[in-house]
Image (cartoon, rainbow, N blue to C red; front, side, top):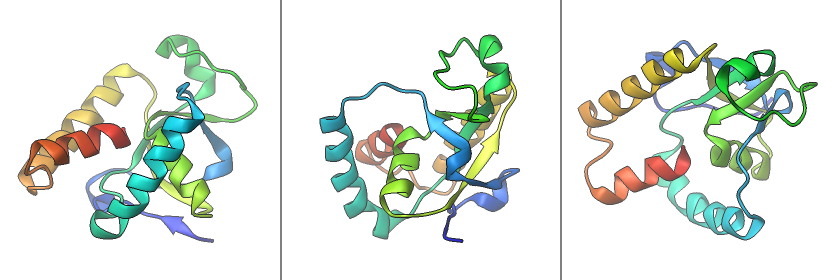
Length: 136
Protein backbone atom coordinates (compact mmCIF):
# COMPACT_ATOMS: atom_id res chain seq x y z
CA UNK A 1 0.00 0.00 0.00
CA UNK A 2 1.48 3.32 -1.12
CA UNK A 3 -0.32 6.26 0.55
CA UNK A 4 -0.15 9.89 -0.55
CA UNK A 5 -0.75 11.79 2.68
CA UNK A 6 -1.32 15.50 2.99
CA UNK A 7 0.92 17.68 5.10
CA UNK A 8 -2.04 18.65 7.29
CA UNK A 9 -3.80 15.29 7.71
CA UNK A 10 -3.88 15.73 11.48
CA UNK A 11 -5.98 18.92 11.14
CA UNK A 12 -8.87 17.15 9.40
CA UNK A 13 -11.04 14.06 9.76
CA UNK A 14 -9.03 12.23 7.10
CA UNK A 15 -9.52 8.82 5.54
CA UNK A 16 -6.81 7.20 3.42
CA UNK A 17 -9.02 6.04 0.59
CA UNK A 18 -8.22 3.59 -2.20
CA UNK A 19 -7.91 5.65 -5.37
CA UNK A 20 -10.04 3.09 -7.23
CA UNK A 21 -13.03 4.12 -5.09
CA UNK A 22 -13.17 7.66 -6.52
CA UNK A 23 -12.99 9.54 -9.78
CA UNK A 24 -12.60 13.13 -10.89
CA UNK A 25 -15.68 14.91 -12.20
CA UNK A 26 -14.01 17.78 -14.05
CA UNK A 27 -13.66 17.82 -17.82
CA UNK A 28 -10.17 19.15 -18.44
CA UNK A 29 -8.41 18.43 -21.70
CA UNK A 30 -5.63 15.86 -21.66
CA UNK A 31 -3.02 18.41 -22.82
CA UNK A 32 -3.79 20.68 -19.86
CA UNK A 33 -3.64 17.72 -17.47
CA UNK A 34 -0.25 16.58 -18.76
CA UNK A 35 1.12 20.14 -18.53
CA UNK A 36 -0.11 20.29 -14.94
CA UNK A 37 1.45 16.90 -14.14
CA UNK A 38 4.89 18.10 -15.19
CA UNK A 39 4.57 21.29 -13.12
CA UNK A 40 3.15 19.45 -10.12
CA UNK A 41 5.86 16.78 -10.33
CA UNK A 42 8.47 19.55 -10.01
CA UNK A 43 6.71 21.31 -7.11
CA UNK A 44 5.71 18.18 -5.22
CA UNK A 45 9.12 17.31 -3.73
CA UNK A 46 9.34 20.84 -2.26
CA UNK A 47 5.85 21.18 -0.83
CA UNK A 48 4.28 17.74 -0.86
CA UNK A 49 0.51 17.50 -0.90
CA UNK A 50 -0.58 20.25 1.44
CA UNK A 51 -4.24 19.34 1.98
CA UNK A 52 -6.48 16.29 1.55
CA UNK A 53 -8.90 15.90 -1.35
CA UNK A 54 -12.56 16.64 -0.72
CA UNK A 55 -14.84 13.81 -1.90
CA UNK A 56 -18.51 13.00 -1.64
CA UNK A 57 -20.60 9.85 -2.03
CA UNK A 58 -22.03 9.48 -5.51
CA UNK A 59 -25.35 8.50 -3.97
CA UNK A 60 -25.60 12.17 -2.90
CA UNK A 61 -24.85 13.48 -6.37
CA UNK A 62 -28.31 14.93 -6.98
CA UNK A 63 -28.08 17.00 -3.80
CA UNK A 64 -24.69 18.37 -4.82
CA UNK A 65 -25.74 19.35 -8.30
CA UNK A 66 -22.85 17.42 -9.86
CA UNK A 67 -23.09 15.34 -12.99
CA UNK A 68 -22.06 11.83 -12.07
CA UNK A 69 -20.94 9.65 -14.93
CA UNK A 70 -20.54 6.35 -13.15
CA UNK A 71 -22.50 5.68 -9.97
CA UNK A 72 -20.81 2.31 -9.49
CA UNK A 73 -17.77 4.15 -8.11
CA UNK A 74 -18.72 5.19 -4.57
CA UNK A 75 -17.03 8.63 -4.40
CA UNK A 76 -16.52 11.62 -6.67
CA UNK A 77 -13.74 14.16 -6.11
CA UNK A 78 -15.14 17.61 -5.48
CA UNK A 79 -11.76 19.31 -4.94
CA UNK A 80 -8.46 17.70 -5.82
CA UNK A 81 -8.97 16.11 -9.23
CA UNK A 82 -5.46 17.01 -10.34
CA UNK A 83 -3.94 15.58 -7.19
CA UNK A 84 -5.87 12.36 -7.75
CA UNK A 85 -4.49 12.15 -11.28
CA UNK A 86 -1.00 12.82 -9.95
CA UNK A 87 -1.41 10.01 -7.40
CA UNK A 88 -2.45 7.61 -10.17
CA UNK A 89 0.44 8.83 -12.34
CA UNK A 90 2.88 8.21 -9.47
CA UNK A 91 1.36 4.77 -8.73
CA UNK A 92 -0.05 5.54 -5.27
CA UNK A 93 -2.79 3.18 -4.13
CA UNK A 94 -4.38 5.40 -1.45
CA UNK A 95 -4.73 9.14 -0.86
CA UNK A 96 -5.84 11.42 1.98
CA UNK A 97 -9.45 12.55 1.65
CA UNK A 98 -12.11 14.32 3.66
CA UNK A 99 -15.58 12.94 2.98
CA UNK A 100 -18.40 15.49 2.93
CA UNK A 101 -22.11 14.90 2.50
CA UNK A 102 -23.20 18.28 1.16
CA UNK A 103 -22.10 21.71 -0.05
CA UNK A 104 -22.23 23.24 3.44
CA UNK A 105 -19.75 20.67 4.76
CA UNK A 106 -17.54 21.24 1.72
CA UNK A 107 -17.53 25.01 2.32
CA UNK A 108 -16.53 24.44 5.95
CA UNK A 109 -13.58 22.26 4.92
CA UNK A 110 -12.48 24.79 2.28
CA UNK A 111 -12.66 27.63 4.83
CA UNK A 112 -10.48 25.61 7.19
CA UNK A 113 -8.00 24.85 4.40
CA UNK A 114 -7.57 28.50 3.46
CA UNK A 115 -7.39 29.66 7.09
CA UNK A 116 -4.82 26.99 7.88
CA UNK A 117 -2.82 27.82 4.78
CA UNK A 118 -2.56 31.46 5.79
CA UNK A 119 -1.88 30.69 9.47
CA UNK A 120 0.91 28.22 8.67
CA UNK A 121 2.24 30.64 6.04
CA UNK A 122 1.85 28.14 3.24
CA UNK A 123 0.39 30.90 1.08
CA UNK A 124 3.14 33.52 1.09
CA UNK A 125 2.80 34.84 -2.45
CA UNK A 126 0.30 35.08 -5.25
CA UNK A 127 2.11 32.14 -6.87
CA UNK A 128 1.45 30.00 -3.79
CA UNK A 129 -2.23 30.93 -3.89
CA UNK A 130 -2.35 30.09 -7.58
CA UNK A 131 -0.59 26.78 -6.83
CA UNK A 132 -3.18 25.75 -4.26
CA UNK A 133 -6.06 26.87 -6.49
CA UNK A 134 -4.68 24.77 -9.35
CA UNK A 135 -4.46 21.72 -7.12
CA UNK A 136 -8.09 22.20 -6.16
